[in-house]
Length: 202
Ligand SMILES: Cc1cc2nc3c(=O)[nH]c(=O)nc-3n(C[C@H](O)[C@H](O)[C@H](O)COP(=O)(O)O)c2cc1C
Image 1 (spheres, rainbow, N blue to C red):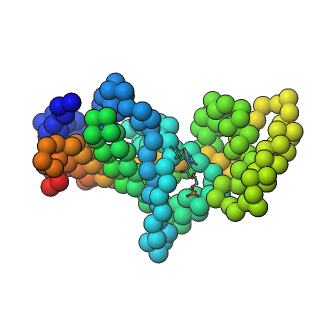
Image 2: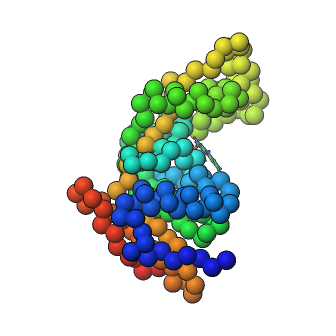
């Protein structure tokens, strides 16, 4: 497949709009699981950790994901809200990097999203003390059975320890594979109310 270049005059001056354009293109190209992204956090001492999460919304205000507010990542975010995200879209050989700061979504927004999840996932969210050590798989299954009993015949509400974060970006980089390792890299960084776009060496 011949890959389209990424050129300054074609790129949208707004990186979120550019993200939406690339996202639509990779989706149309049949990219499997385009919402999968790596989320990197760090302790205040600068010890990094990374894991994958799912992008649930991208818009002018940022990038949203959902998780357990008692998890390791949440503890790191409470102490240091700076994050990095990475998307790899193999189908069109594209990488997108995002750096920014997280804020928690209001619980009404988390509740609205939680309500769209299948019942089994909602039970799982209640039952799993994410990132904690378990005595074994049986402990998790016992917790699931308890939660199923607790909410039998009822709706499963938003757990108080679960919800979303929004990443407000200050740097975004679009990387397009090209021949001979001479890839295109356009980086946007916030300056005042706008964005400055710069080409980086591959
Ligand atoms: C493809 C993929 C998608 C995932 N999506 C999420 C997600 O949206 N939210 C989440 O909390 N964990 C998600 N996970 C699990 C996380 O990678 C991780 O195991 C979990 O959040 C605990 O991370 P922590 O202990 O660093 O907090 C996903 C894992 C994979 C492989």
